Image (cartoon, rainbow, N blue to C red; front, side):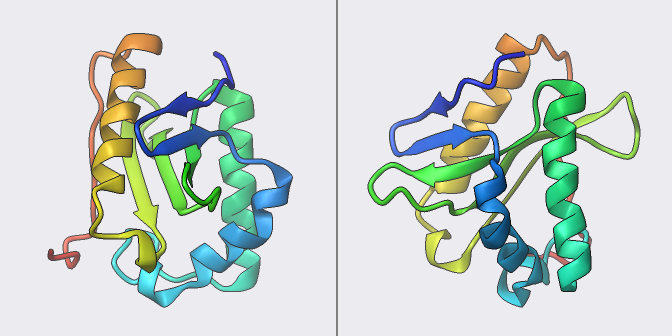
Length: 137
């Protein structure tokens, strides 16, 4: 699959690069971000491992979670895209954004682009979404 970025009106969705490591380690350690996500807040070692998993998913499968970059600022806002779940026959849409980027429709905009990519480009027949039971909105 192509590592070409996907663009929406306000986002560039691109594969992660090694230069994103510091941002994503901070992301995975941030209680405001991770307390409601299924894997929870991580320590620095686990956060680095999570970033390695992002990179390896792309290498192994040709798709994965993207770095959602805000076009207006060039800032990486978190993670957003598609990945295999623990079930190797199941792909999920997943997203999480740093707190300042929430409530502005970025997650919806990016998730719709990810779903479109999954169905149209990847030819997936089904995409699931999962969340923590305690993640009430």
